[in-house]
Amino acid sequence: MSENNGQQPVDPWTTFERRYKPGQLVTGTVTRIAPFGFFARIEDGLEGLVRLSELPSWLNPLQNLRAGQQLPLRILSVDAERRHIELSFKQVGGI
Image (cartoon, rainbow, N blue to C red; front, top):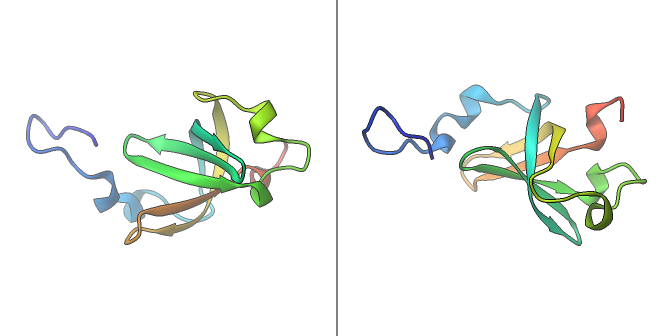
């Protein structure tokens, strides 16, 4: 969460849908790698999932990615109520 001029921390989910839209390209930082894909932070307090089906066939996250690595990602869907973000690496294009 980001600070708001020394006041209460601002929850990034309160403004997420105004700042990000499905289809938008973002830069994500790999935070966790799992057998089903990986999680990427797009800003403090906002993390999304990139499923294996949204990776190119040549990319094995367990072998080719590391925590802290930055990647271009596309936002597929957002469920602010459940605080879920689905991301794609495959749909960025040019990879």
